[in-house]
Image (cartoon, rainbow, N blue to C red):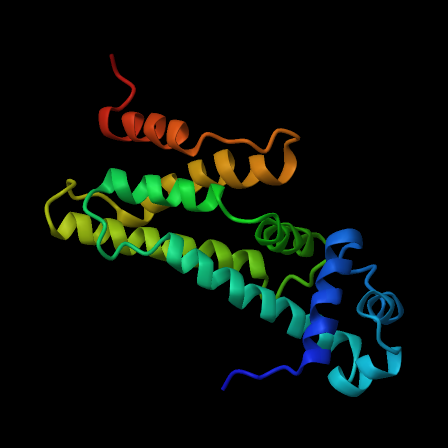
Length: 197
């Protein structure tokens, strides 16, 4: 069962994430979080017991919100064509808010300071997207819309282009304006027609 948060807990969780955005997970102290949330530091310990719990709860809170959006973007119910589906993916990722992209950025920054056996949010995000793409392409193969190919490899190919052209560009380039339609059209042209003259 999902935990319900009271107003003070939500305020602390949101403040924790803002500190993650500004300074990273490693530099987020309970003192900074308390100041950001406008609560006493003791309140953090009363509500979350310790910093480790607060960090994990905050990551899960934002991760769950983000995964819900990703599932919606990569949902293929009612999508008529492959072109429509891939265009929806590109546009959906491009239209995510700055806060949504902060979740990805925090997840990616988590990798550098992480314990190897620890489950990483970025891995979960990647697997969610890849699984949706693979399911979609398997369905297209079953329907005879595309030839028999490795659906996972096709999903990885689409994810790679999406990740590079939309996600990394949005996170790390000064010019965050990406023409998702242009990218998706160019990608689908190459995907369908190959590179041979």
